[in-house]
Length: 102
Image (cartoon, rainbow, N blue to C red):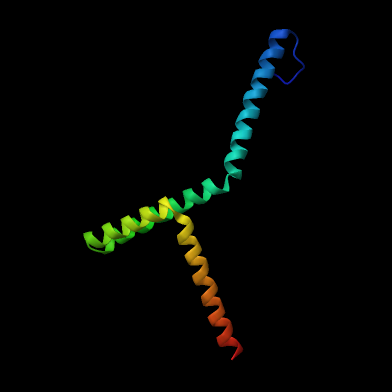
């Protein structure tokens, strides 16, 4: 359509349906961008796949298998891993702060 006001009921319905489809696509795209949990999961999965491939390239098969099993464990339940990493970062920061204060 040329952007003009619809001339009859059929054009109005077509315009309405087109607008609905465009709005639905826009809302879906916004929903995906706002789904932080899914985006983080995708990022973690991508990084784990890259790390697993690198480990497989530079180590022997049993080590690569163990690393892959660990990566799968992180994928299935990432919260404890992230909590552990956060705790480790806090401890490191406290240690560095004490060293700088001395």
